Image 1 (cartoon, rainbow, N blue to C red):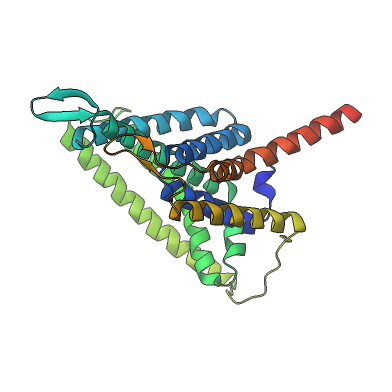
Image 2 (image 1 turned 120 degrees about the vertical axis):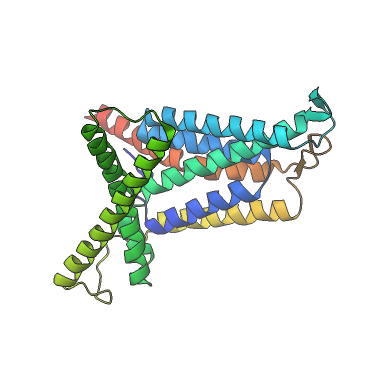
Length: 288
C-alpha cells in the first residue's frame, strides 16, 4: 500500500521540488548518494521488483558518465594510467561517478513523481490556471498513449514484413522515420478528436470545481518540515559548510553532519510513511 501517494498534492509538490533542488545544487557525494538511496528505497517499497530495472538503468548512467568524464577531462593529481600524452586521473573518474549518481537519483525521483502525481493532482495544484492545468494533464495522458501507439505501429510494420526487421541500417532508419511520421499524424488526429469531444460536451475552464483533497494538520506539518530542511540545506551550501572538491585532490573541505541528517530524513520520508502504514496494517491484523 503506497500511503505516500495518497497524501495531499501540495505536500507532493513541495517534497519533489525540494528533493530535486537539493539533489542537483548540492554537489556533494554524500548528498548525491543519499538522494539515490532514498529514491531506490521508495520505488522498491511501493513498486516491488520494478526497482531492479531502475537500478540497471541508473548503473548504466553512472558507468557511462564516469568513464566519459575520465576520458575527456584531465584534471587531478592521482594518475590511474596514461596513453601517450593523455593522462587519466582518479579525480576525473570520481567526479564523473558523482555526477552519474546525482543524475541517476534525479531520474529516479522524477520517475517516482510521474507515478505519484497523476493528472487529477496536477489539475488541483494548477487550479489557479485551469487552461495550463488542462494542457499539462493532457500531456501526461498522451505520453503513455503515444508510447503504446508507437509499439502498435512498429508491430504492424513488422507484420507486413513477415515479422522480421530490416538488417540494413539505411532501411531501418527509413522505417523509423515512417513510423515517426505515422505517430505524428495519429497524435494530431487524436488531439483534434479530443478537442471536438470536449467542445461537444460543453467544457468550460472557468466552471466551479469540487476537490476531494483537504489540507490537514499532518499535511501542513510535513510541508513545513520539507521547507525547513530545504532552507537549512541551501544555507549550509551557501555558507560552504558542505564543501567537497575533486580538484586537485578529492577532499572534504567542510562537512555539516546536521545538514546531511536532515537531507537523509527528507529522502527517507516516502519510505518511512509507507512502512508506517504497513506496520499499522500488521498490528491491526494481529488484533483481529
